[in-house]
Length: 369
Image 1 (cartoon, one colour):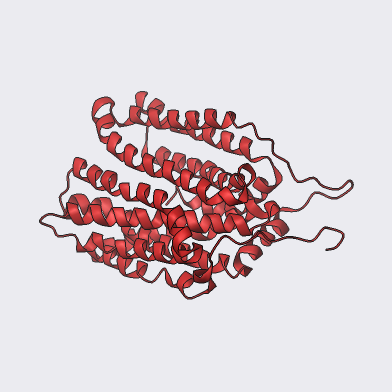
Image 2 (cartoon, one colour; image 1 turned 90 degrees about the vertical axis):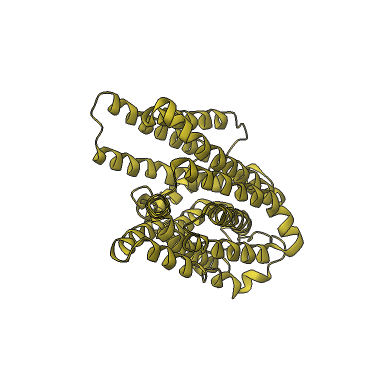
């Protein structure tokens, strides 16, 4: 919960700063700051000073820098590639994420057994440094919106409201936000207690849990590779709808997995969820970037993150509360049944009829406006 709470508290002002400043320095600073925070965990442990409250504070602080990084990187891509390459660019980004989701859980068990958990976090910190080094190699110049001479510095709140109005008032962005936000809420009800269910109810070992997430994440790689072809074949809108339907139905695998031999069902459910979730994200993020004016990219992404990731901490708390009151399996059923309806906002609106990525909005010049 503390990892995602910063998206509720800081996403909207982060969008304003991302639109005002160059985005690459924000990305680099976000990576290096998270590396420093992560390194403090093994240092505190080595001196015998590590406490649970420190981990909670660190998780919240890391979440703050994650907010700025995520808002900035989605806003940065449209300035790096042409509009026609957005889907391909987002597919490549999602592909690297998917590969990491396979490699990370698969490697973590061995690392923890070999060098212990605190020192395994050192490698996590090193990955953020490597990310920053890669971004230092980006040479494409950025342009910062210039203010006219004598024009007063814009205030934060009016710019925040402009980004929110753009998302909430747009006929396509509004249902996408509703679908994604509700999906995140119900899936987090399940994910928040899934590990407890795997170990306490299904009696899976640490290796078996790693197999579920590692092999299941292969679906994410398949989704990243298939997203381009899906959108060319059935259109952007139908890809969004079909992908969300797949991800929604996959959540049934958790409560339906047989206790005697749950691995095949869990792996299949995780794979289908990964395929649908990644294909959906590639399609809807590309659409958002294509239809939003450059000057609003940061605030649009921030407003979307505020809405759709703001439901995640609510879902985690709800999952824990339902599981405490009624049991782990009951919480999984609530998450799975609720997820079944999350595709409706995009399926019942004009989003489903979008063929190719539309042209971006052309805004009037200042004098004409």
